[in-house]
Image (cartoon, rainbow, N blue to C red):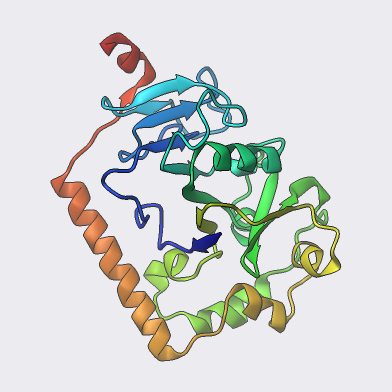
Length: 254
């Protein structure tokens, strides 16, 4: 079991030879995926646009919680902004682990969901002590905990890279979790330690747990790394232009 925190969804450890599945790609599929699984094709309630697919990909209309694949059929599985929509995240994660040996999960953090809430989201998440901790939104306090102190008096003094804010500080907006073998996850934990992050205003100690303190040298190094990654990604996008097509166009081409 192991995991790392990529800069973003374009910073993944995928080999050229890997057979890659993406679950719930919606309107923004990963070009690297060989196979796409999408549950909802007649409604955009859970996404921001119509289903898109790249011509080289195989499309399968199926539920990500019960996929028509053999055990470990894929080398890598991508799951961006999907887990927060599921009814049973534990069952969904078990299915991801069944069909692939490693992969990438991205979902809104508690802070990100508090700033930009979406009705379709059922869960919020934090990575605490290496664990993905999911908490049901309906169980949160009616008024979300006050993060004003975190944003006004803590984070601005920690980060020099305001233009790369989300990527230079993991969990400000999303939780990014690249895993191998197994995913360490808790759902609606009863332990007061974990619950406190979702139900109470954060203390300074809790702030440092989610956003670890780093030196100015570390902050500059991380900021440079993020900026270089963004430049590299931008150059790649301009050189290698890939345009997805609609589901109707995809079906007509088959």
